[in-house]
Amino acid sequence: LSCYAKAQDYNYQFQDTTQTYISLVDSTKTQVSQFDDITKLPIGFTFNYAGKIIDSVSVRSTGLLMFDTDNQYNFAFLSKDFVKDTENENLLSSISYTVESDSYGRNIMKIEFKNVMLVRGEEIIHLNFQVWLHQFTNSVEFRMGIIEGTMPSENYLMGLINMNNTDVASVGYLLSGNAASPSPELISPQGSLIELTSLPTNGTVYKFTPSN
Figure 1 (cartoon, rainbow, N blue to C red):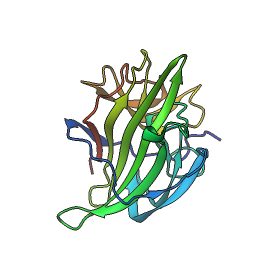
Figure 2 (cartoon, rainbow, N blue to C red; figure 1 turned 135 degrees about the horizontal axis):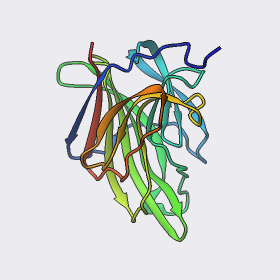
Figure 3 (cartoon, rainbow, N blue to C red; figure 1 turned 90 degrees about the horizontal axis):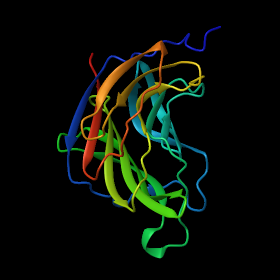
Figure 4 (cartoon, helix red, strand yellow; figure 1 turned 30 degrees about the vertical axis):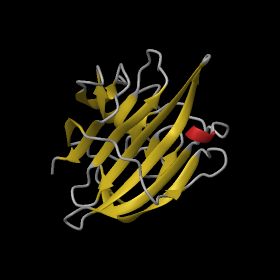
């Protein structure tokens, strides 16, 4: 049985914009000690993700949203070995969420990784970023915030992906190239994994919206 028997609908449009990053206020923290691998959260409304109707999402502290238990409906954002900083009082790490309404009364679930830490040799980097789920449009939005420290040259996974057996093949709608001008690409079952070649800067907004 192929691991791609459940077909995902990756007919999405991509939009790259910039907007001032605003940290969440009065959000619910999901992990208060060390980061757990997976935390399941209620979305607060029904959401269509790649053709699958769901009302909850699991958050991996590595930068991954999981919309099923088979690891086939996922949204990857950066996908790094983030750890929790529990020692720096000015940069305490957290993962939190809230559901807010826009000016039209449409719900948006917002998940924030705040001051999460990456260790690269002697370099310590703190990052802030959010992922938004829009009820009305079923869009997924990634928002990059403040970065403290200097990231070495690395690649970053960004977009919709079936992560079952990604070492052999992957299916998804992913971004490639420089983060300042990324190119979206639909990946076939036998396609190669593609990634961003640089880290998005503060204020970057990537939005993935279903075409139908």
